[in-house]
Image 1 (cartoon, rainbow, N blue to C red):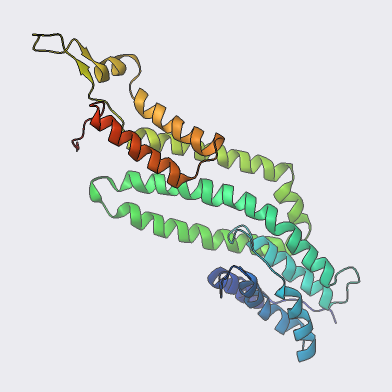
Image 2 (cartoon, helix red, strand yellow; image 1 turned 180 degrees about the horizontal axis):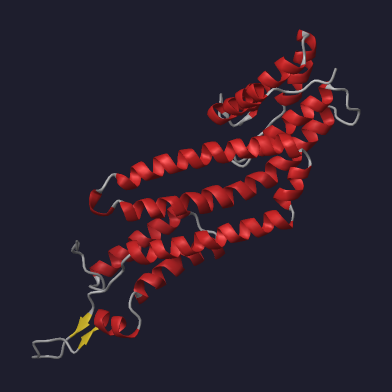
Length: 278
């Protein structure tokens, strides 16, 4: 009789991964134990004998680490492979399963970090910041609710799609369709981040030049810049930070320290106004 994982077991496996993907996290094992927890319900349903369960679980003791949200698809795929192995499929063994896990965890981590951490989260935070104007708590509440709903249902969709598609899920993630999706989300993230920068970052100068004996300055640099290119200094600082982070590969901490130094020197020589404006 063909063995088939129940939806209840698959859901329990997903929940184990969703809530416990960082279980007993360490530099030595990373997400290995979280993976073991997620596969335990699958193995218990597929195998009746304890020795068969132990043999199967040993497959998932190998090192594992990836981006946990998008990496859910790998867990779903291996649940499907484990089901195939329990049914005696000849071309599915320990090497097949571990080869798939090891081969996908790196690319999935790179894709997930750029899409989830580098794009989706900044977009949600940008919207939340706009809703928090004047100290409103709505932005924080919105972010908490939307992020958790997005993470839960997105990860659940990926888990069951991974289980359903098996190896075909790899083609979607790293193929032309996946590439087009990543480019679209990245472009949207760039637009949102640009809008957030223009809205929340304001760099102005207090530099003026006054002729001897005159009451008013003949040059107000900020007004001159606003007449030519409003927000020019803000754009220069944002592009400069992007250049240092992206092209020069400087760490965010070094860039922030550099900005502190620039601000200190700018205030000291009178280029920036040391006062705060609200």
